[in-house]
Amino acid sequence: MTTLAAALLEGLKEHGAREIFGIPGDFVLPFYKAIEESRILPHYTLSHEPGVGFAADAAARYHQGLGVAVVTYGAGAFNLVNAVAGAYAERSPVVVIAGAPGARERAGGFLLHHQARSIDTQLAVFREITCDQAVLDDPGRAPEAIARVLRNAREQSLPVYIEAPRDLVGARTAAVPTLACRPADPGALAECAEEILARLAQARAPVMIVDVEIRRYRIEAKTAKLARALELPVVTTFTGRGLMEEAADVLAGTYLGAAGHPEITRLVEDADAMLLLGVIVSDTNFALSQRQLDAQRTMLAVGREVRVGHHVYRNVPIEYLEDELVRRTPRRNKPAGRKRLVLPYPRGLAADDRPIAPSDVAAAINDLFDRHGKMPMAADMGDCLFVAMEIDNTALAAPGYYAGMGFGVPAGIGVAVATQRRPLVLVGDGAFQMTGWELGNCRRHGLDPIVVLLNNRSWEMLRAFQPESAFNDLDDWHFAEIAPALGGTGERVTTRREFAAALERAVQNRGRFALIEVMLPRGRTSDTLARFVAGFKAVRAPAPA
Ligand SMILES: Cc1ncc(Cc2c([C@H](C)O)sc(CCOP(=O)(O)OP(=O)(O)O)c2C)c(N)n1
Ligand SMILES: [Mg+2]
Image 1 (spheres, rainbow, N blue to C red):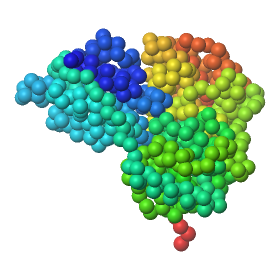
Image 2: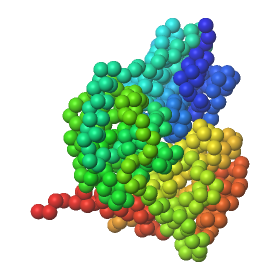
Image 3: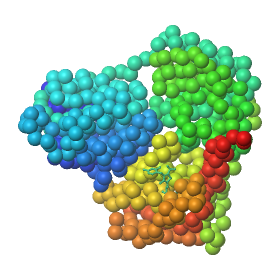
Image 4: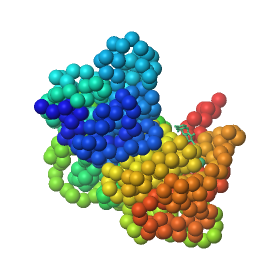
């Protein structure tokens, strides 16, 4: 027997959690004490719960396993909602552990501090943005409940919610068992694989499109192997950018519809069979398609289900499907027979005294990665995410579908912790105003991300859609000057020469975060965002009368 806190922490570790991000509060103090004293999992406190959620989400994405966010009841947990909603949307398995009142407080008759409506309002809210929930109010049944919830988080790659009443954290209980994820339905698997291979064999110009689930289920290498065996060219979606970093021989690039590279767009839109693996069929991924995802050419495996045309095969996890497809495909281990697309990425930035344009940021980073090797990346929402599309395909955590701002810097902290490597973060000034201050926690956690802040003193992405609105103008916050007070170094750069030099200095200086504030003009976006906005307006334009 053990305590409920220790059983939960050991259970998290057994199910793949590697650290905890959190902010304590009185309803979770006993559990947080157990986290600190047990040392079962390292823990990182941050400054605001949105950052806790984004860090846990990004860590889950890079672990290809569970991220863990521990918060207090009410004020802490409700602060976490937006980050968990984004994790749910992008299928990132964040385990939310929220403190809660004990039995005596529940029966005490008072309205409790941090209580919004009823004491169970918090549980009700998290039911909407998690795939399973457990309230640990019965130590005897807690181990099974925890096992079920953690298995569901891993199996469905979705967030889950565990509520820990503060008076039971020390209660005696048994260890948490580890439940295996459920296998595929063998009949559905065989039939589905057969139908997919038959369709691909008849196709003249098939293509494979990959997205988040091939990372969530750790099957990037397996997917590359499948692509070679089937001789399929591979593209990622917008939300899948950065996947298959190690498989440059099969990956052609990222599909962005009208906003993308014409050859990639043609590869997808001229395809007569599309195998979509782990794809979120969202507007950000397909709204700019000039050809719809018509059922007769689409085969979609996501969320433990496979749709082949109008046929639906349930209980077919993507990792099982890929194994079965490879097993049934003759051994070939070479890229697609057709000429492989090699996209040109901007490189060789002239280190001159010309002002920096957004797409210069990508060129400078490509040059940096060529010199020093790629760095794991995180990006926020804004033009910075479109700049990331111009950086040679590199592992990336970014809110490409949910599109919530504030993700970038905390996600960079999560990436640094999860990978134990120095990350490069791309963020706009508007998003930095939201959560950039989490950099102030880097020194005490021994983290030193490089942060490239695109400062156009503007909500520029909104201006690109609605240029006439003055409310997109932001003030100049001189972020680089604030960096030393937060424990890092800050440089403000206005020319391409200054930017290239600042990047190089940042790479050389370890041990403190480096904030490079890149001054950009209002009214100017990356080439990719400009095409995205033009494409979006064209698609949305009213049909001619
Ligand atoms: C939490 C949050 N609030 C508001 C938005 C709307 C929004 C955008 C999307 C369309 O929803 S893009 C954008 C401006 C971003 O400004 P900044 O970070 O400076 O980047 P840039 O100047 O490169 O645009 C906003 C406010 C959002 N996505 N997420
Ligand atoms: Mg901006």
